[in-house]
Length: 407
Ligand code: ADP
Ligand code: MG
View 1 (cartoon, rainbow, N blue to C red):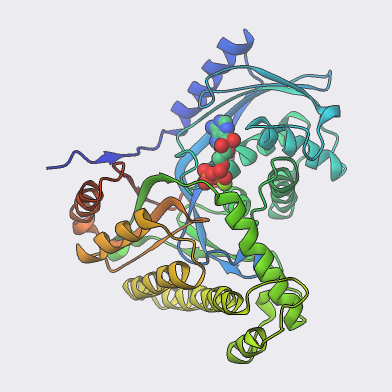
View 2: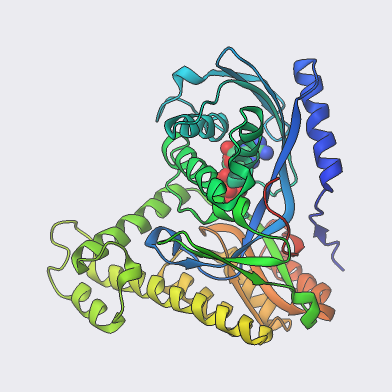
């Protein structure tokens, strides 16, 4: 028998109180307010965001909480319960690409990016705490950025969080914080999920037009559940691998003469051109590898459309095999899976899951399994047993319910 570890979400009241308490301890004062933003799951659409493609994420009930107080001297003092509770101080005037290291970069990066966008923001004291699993592919980074963006919006009266157009500007600031100040070349899915989702709905985001559609996403009504497995595997080289995938996609788009791989309409013709000898002379990409990378991206965008159509028809269970096909594509063509993710998906399918795949950037992090409600426990036990057999670190679990956006 295995004692399964379930990752429970805090209530908003509890999370806010925890952040306010940390603030009072660290700064010997009360915060002006507390804001929060969710981690995310992603039903389908992986490594498509930076290719101008489609994604279908949803907000988790797990959130990051930011207690904040405005300061008028341009300084940011920040503390996080997840980072030893040590107070750091950064002057906003010193923030620039490459100038701030560690977790503070995600925070001051948001203020920097909003200022770049013409918003009059200044200093603040900040206490962070979170129940979003850390570095688990569930986007604790965008939850952190989103909570800070909401706080700055309120403290400096920006009014951006009031409507979706304003939230798009907050999303853009969070993306710039992560890309340019924290130095992580991620796409924009996570930040949009943190700020533009709706409770009970998944977010169909077109990463080319930035248009969204809210898709009703209530699996329980169909007797289904989405089990998330945090594999606890955090592999090195992740950032380098992610950047390498992006570079290959950009080089392939250049060879094809398109702005992004979203523009590819005839996959076979495109793969033929990319695989031709000498196609990549200038950028030094391996044509055989590039062909597989592009095949993943283009088929993955098609899978998002397929899942969208299935959900519209109410054929929720039919989504399962599409998830499993996505996993094979991520594992074999995009090569971003790892042993823990493959074991999690394989064990879930063997135990009766109707589909499953890795989510997030890969090389560790989390997997999802679409399961009948009555099979949740048995599938989780099977995954935990498979991990024990492989001598992996025990995984942790949560059942994803589409929750509300940053508030
Ligand atoms: P993921 O977004 O999948 O959880 P990332 O590597 O993108 O993983 O982001 C994790 C990083 O974000 C952490 O290493 C840390 O720098 C920052 N971060 C996220 N949540 C917090 C938090 N609660 N407190 C401090 N830093 C955080
Ligand atoms: Mg992240």
